[in-house]
Amino acid sequence: MGNSAPAPPSETKPSPTLDEPWRKVSRQDNERDLKYVQDYKPENNSIRHLRILLHGPVGAGKSSFINSVSSTLQGRIAIPAVTSAITADKSFTTKYQTHKIKKGRGSSAVCYPLVFNDIMGLEGGTNAGVHPDDIKLAMRGHVREGHKFNPVAPLSEEDPGYNRTPSADDKVHVLVCIHSANASEIKDSVLKKMSSIRQAASDLGIPQMAIITKIDEACPETGKDLKNVYKSKHLKKKMKEFSSALGIPMNCIFPVKNYSEEIETHEDVDTLILSALRNMINFGDDFIENLQVWNQEL
Ligand SMILES: Nc1nc2c(ncn2[C@@H]2O[C@H](COP(=O)(O)OP(=O)(O)O)[C@@H](O)[C@H]2O)c(=O)[nH]1
Ligand SMILES: [Mg+2]
Figure 1 (cartoon, rainbow, N blue to C red):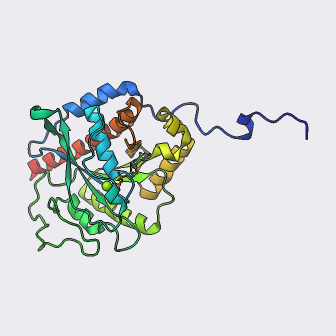
Figure 2 (cartoon, rainbow, N blue to C red):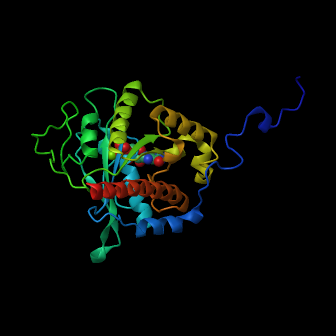
């Protein structure tokens, strides 16, 4: 045994990557996807913008995702609209805030007809995160801009932060759960909250998807080259685990690497952000279209 030649690495350790990607995305799609997002306009006249609600644990990358979308669409790193440092403080009271994405520069600047809200929450204890009932109210458009969430007392109808007459574009059109690929197993208490939120969204017919962030940290091969994302066995496993824990089908889960330390945008980062965004718009627009049908039927 002693002087036998060592086995080649491929025999001792299975490769961490698949030979072929299991989902096809490439930087060649960037231009098409960017154009799709740039040209998007909700068909429904009563809706000025598609409202996307991001929810997930503190530090999952919600604010970074909004900033990354902004950077990708502007072709340069956007000045953070939302500071990430304060989100690390779990006692920080979150405000319900709508984030818009600027299109163009200077006096000709307008905003994209898509807006984001992000809600932290789903932490284990009762005194951390936004109450699930408040997330449900936000989905139905009942939470006013600037309302400060109280984790122990959900919004009541008497509260000035309660909007009794939400318009169609106050309502949420896509619900996105954001989670880090680098996080350990999701706690049972968190899962319970997530599933109650998911159920509420299902009851309202709101489409749901998930974004898995920090794929660069979770998988070294993907960290080195983002093009490995759909070849990574580890990430595929993580996405499957996530899919079964949350009940979100694989084709509604998108891995991204957010802009975090970069000073310039990068095509491969943009590819994944655009792929997620394009699908978000598709899902949301289907919902908006149905709203219109319902309105006509009423
Ligand atoms: N490496 C890496 N870091 C990320 C990614 N997304 C977010 N981060 C970092 O994770 C931290 C928390 O992100 P943040 O967006 O504030 O999370 P939030 O609490 O969900 O809003 C920040 O330091 C980000 O720079 C990612 O995809 N890759
Ligand atoms: Mg944040």
